[in-house]
Each structure stands twice: as structure tokens, then as C-alpha cells.
Image: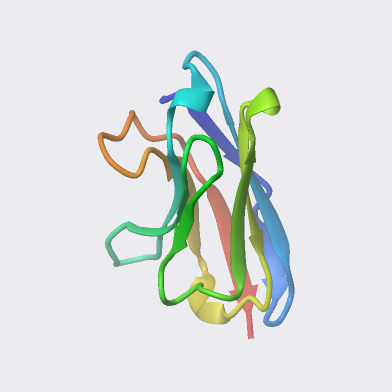
Length: 115
């Protein structure tokens, strides 16, 4: 078990919204950029969004751009992923970790989008 614990997943209809949370412990959280990843059944884990340590910059994968928003609260050691206009293809287990030089992975949180 790594330093991040993900939560907030669930079952939602297409077009709906969810907000994921990722809370860190045991690390100096505000030193690190953090990313949200997802892994769908039978597919490789992919990075969908990342945010710099100071929140000055963020980036998104093409598949989620304009629908997902990543933000963080360093005082709470937490990074969030607001997901709007969800599609069935967003169904996956979502994880957070550093965008490079990852720590051990957490258990993730399941997001299921029904059509």
C-alpha cells in the first residue's frame, strides 16, 4: 500500500458526475506533482490528468479534456478529480500517484458509468 488512498467512486448514469478524492499520508505532499490514472478491464493503466505541486499547471488526456478537472488542497493533503459528462468508456478503476517515479500503488476506486 502506497501513500495515497482513493475514494469517491461509484455507479453513475451516462451524462452524470462524480468527484474523486485522493488523500496522501507519510509524504511531504506539497512537494509532489500528482496525477489521476485509470485502468479499464483488459487495458493498460493510463494517466488522465495531472497537477503540479503548487497547482500552477495541470494537464489532461485528450479523452477527458473539457470534462474532467483536477485540483488539489495542500492543506488537506488531498487531490481531487471532478468528472462531468461521464461516458460508459470512462468506466475503470481510478488511481492517483506521481506522474513519474511512482510510489507503490493504492487500491484505487471503481467508477462505473452505465449507458
